[in-house]
Image (cartoon, rainbow, N blue to C red):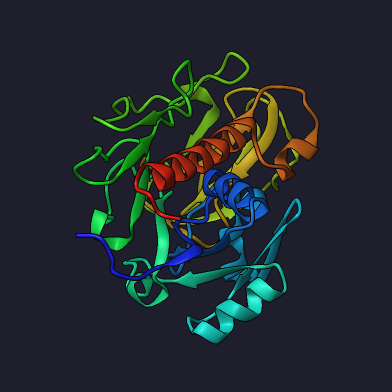
Length: 275
């Protein structure tokens, strides 16, 4: 059942990872007041292009978009927006959504399943990737799998199923992803943006070495001191020689998804007559 009242300029984004940041940038640049809901310890791999990093650092900038970690209050949100900053709130269950009364909620957690987003959260609801179905769970779903359908808006049905196989970049797919060999604390030997050689130790988990299977640039890695579990994705190596600056700017996929969510929001707003 839809809300009786809402703020037509506010959009809540669940998740502040690298792909969500592409969405946040597009919506904020388009004049929307965006608020991001995150978990207490975000597990973004591409931390240098994820606004969720603001939770650890207090304030974090990706390109022209600044995120600031704040406790929820109407005053804190308004202060951020007046400074043209994106408020980042710890609220994994979306408990403050009802108080914020946004016109739209976007689930950009990309957990491959729905972690609680429902149509009664806002007049417009959008899910990204596997785990969502339109129009039963949300109003629209965005395809997130690389390929011909990337960024397409689904109004009836589900996106492509999660294959568990990372998208191909520079001829590499499964091998570009670093995974934890066991449960334990990660200790990084290299930083994001550094060149890594085949066989080089990138990090250790509980003392076990994690080595690169090919040479490239370390595109992302879990933050030092994070607890991992066996098989967990902890890093990403880019085989392309595109320069380290690509590790610090929003990716092509994130920009694509940002445009897709903006299109979905405007389309659904018009379709529902929400002026």
